[in-house]
Each structure stands twice: as C-alpha cells, then as structure tokens.
Length: 120
Image (tube, rainbow, N blue to C red):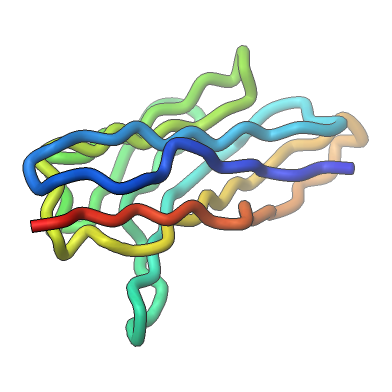
C-alpha cells in the first residue's frame, strides 16, 4: 500500500525553525514532483512550496527566503526546512507527491498532515 507520512511538526516560538519530513512507502519507483501545502483554521489550503524531480523549486511569496523544499529520491522523501517562523505560519502542513510506481503508473498522493504552531 502506497502512502505518504509526514513528521516533524510541533510548537515553536516565533523566529524558530522546524524541519518537516514526508516519507513515501510502498511500491514506488520515484517521486516525480512534490509540494507542501498548508491550511490554517478557517482558511483555504494554500501551496507553500513545490519541487520537480530535476530540482526546480517554487515558493509562495509569504515564505520565500525563509523556507526551503528539498527532494531525496534515494530515500523517497521530501523535506521542508522552515526558518524564521512567524505566528502566521501556524497551520496543518500537508505533503503532496506525484509518484511513479513500480507498475509504471503515475498517481498523486496526500499525507495525513502535521500541525505546526508558532507562538508569539
């Protein structure tokens, strides 16, 4: 069974850092593209950062310069390094990945989400 499992969330003071991990498991050949989204209470889910297999990245303006997304296909994992955190970064963070499976089909998966809380 293919799944994405996030970890690394928690509570941190403003100005602090967290590193989120998203590990893919199952019959997976590689991650083609991946992204991190977040959803704050009462708000729509928004794209935070995205990365392609060749390393191209894209960031929301609100996190550019503070967050870094990375992809390691040797470990079939995606990471989000979050620095200089602000209270407005508080949200549930979700991993999204476009996976090439060993059956040579491509499917999109979501993780279950991990809570990030930044206190002022």
